[in-house]
Image (tube, rainbow, N blue to C red; front, side, top):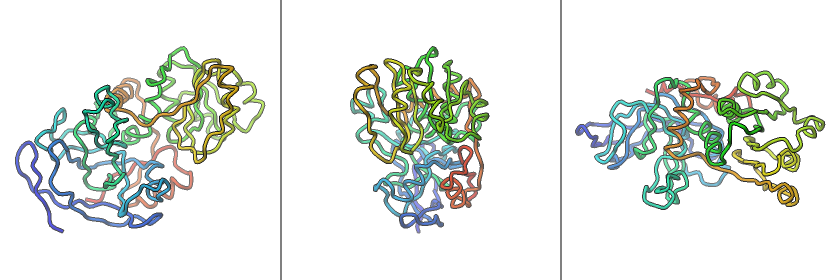
Length: 352
């Protein structure tokens, strides 16, 4: 495979081929893959990957659960690394800067959504591992606007999961107008939920963790929950009725949604960020009688990602992570699929 020339801002340099781990079929094992992405786009940057988080979405894409995966497939959309090449039109970042790249890698910048600051809602959104190679690799590319500088005070070895899992639970706080005076619940204390507890606690809310794992109760309290509800207990769920201004569901499982609607106070909101595998059976009467609502949201705009990282640096918020070398990515994915991750996995790049 022939190497190509990329034109960075500081002159012409020779770029070697990219080495990655990819699968050639659905549910396939990751194996060595080398490729050349061709000339760098005028507004693109290329990132030398140092760390990459492992997200359940990587697993869903690998298995083609959403029927959108193209093979060979290279996972990885929670990348941390340094900028090693820049197109002529790249702005706001500089060579050698440490940046992060999450689920999204590009947007048009001229549609109504982009012009109103909702870049993550762009109809031309380019997603980091959809139809392109991700960051289980030596290098990954994105539009400069989606390369988010990593602030001092944010641990680069743990920051990757913030770029997807973190922003997914932080964005609703802004979008839904969650206030410090609100009583909030977090359903599911896993990769997303353990970050939501930290954010909401520092946001000033009264925070309740809903969990089916009694073993996570003390951990949930250490991460910011003021109260813990055992979801196996009908009595505890009953006592929660009419209590919450906002409930954030982070799970990808079918639940008793009527029970959670009943837990909402009047004008409360049930907000879904976990990809539930079946349609939600939502009865109309609890919504109408209590003026309640149900909604959802994706990740977040570049500005919101930057705001989240600032919030993390200010309040010392970080994912709880387990680290694997990237060469053992198959082992890391199996660990995740088995439900053993506590609470996010990060790969340290050793592909070299």
